[in-house]
Length: 603
Image (cartoon, rainbow, N blue to C red; front, side, top):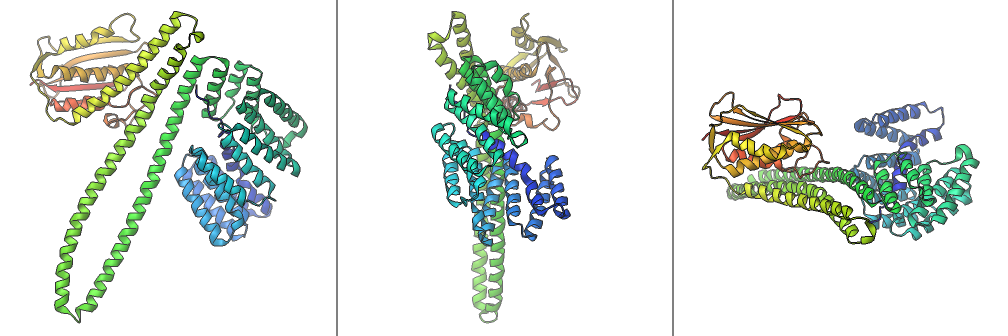
């Protein structure tokens, strides 16, 4: 199994620590600075309430005050904390733009000694986005920029380098960490020294050097007893987990992971512990949860970056419009001056100009239409890739992992285990085939506008056939049939396509119906039009959230990202129903689950 990346643990903790360090400027000004204390309290309140707008306003006012008081160090520290706040809320694009503004401000004011802060921030941003080579370049550059007499700042950059090297180059990570430890130890900073020793336990764990883990942990606990309140507990639980794994106390290590505050770290550690203990089944299951959470976070980050890019595009367009308008006004002013001298020449010029403007407007109109189509195609592509990335990669990982296990006879003890793994591989294969079939189905339905309707379909018989496979005693749910139509009631339609629609609606109901729930198939006439036949599929699941009543019929939309499927079933069902002259609607009056109604004309 692929080695789980632990190199960003320290940076995640750094974010939380830095976000709470906003009190430093006010303390340095002294208790008599009541204005700074008041502004600081407003910042803290906004941060604790998780209100972004209030936080940005509060920290901007605080930063402005510190600048007015000529507290330059505090001024840039507030700015740095605002950037880290954005990073902690997955606003990476916004954070990167702010570091650029921060650097421009430093250069404009001539505060070149502070430039390393923006360089270090960019390294943190790129490391969290997964661009480790670029992050490494920025941290190396920060080492060149920082004043080496500033011990804490220099040591923090070395620890950042150790963070990003821990997974792929653990030996280099240990070298940089040892540099940080020597710098801190020589300056006698007890808190930072214990913090670095705690991190050394984790780096030793990443190297799988259990002797180094034991030695570093022994020193770490000794510092805890010796330093008291000056001891850093930042890496305390991480160190305990590493020590438990080194001692092969895997069950204790798993329990200790639940003390971590970051869900991603919990799943990453558990996956690795299960792998080291030889429990491959739990390792695979835990990794699946980890990847689902990671994909969800990446989707949020991708959406944030696209929104930022769109805002920049709108700004550029507005600026171009302003320049164009100003140039047009200038042209008119020149035209008025020329009019007094060359009337005939102006008339000819205006005629040519109007002709040119009309042509340009037509071209601009065509370009706008082309741009809108391109943007819509790009949006559809992003939605498609986002869903495919999650839905196809999960079964592929399962197939790959179990294929490796089943190919090695030493890992299994019985034929029953091999049969079970083969069954799981088959299920994952069927999942991929189903996803591809849905994509091909929606593609084919998009390209046609007419479906042949020449089949005479008996509605009640159709429902009996649909319910047959789900009425055995081993079914996890109970299936009820309510046939309010006469058995002689028939409609002229396309049997194959109607079966596909009902299969999509049944799959959706089964997916969201819990163990022991009920699914009801019902046939009846439309209450307002006797020439319309209705077939409803009702479940006792979680229902549809308010506001999602129409979104669920969009391509690739999923109300629950952890459920199987790519979000095409309901979209395909509605499109086919409308091509048959009917529709698929959600009964919003039903609130004990979900009820989807297929409406079809008799002829």
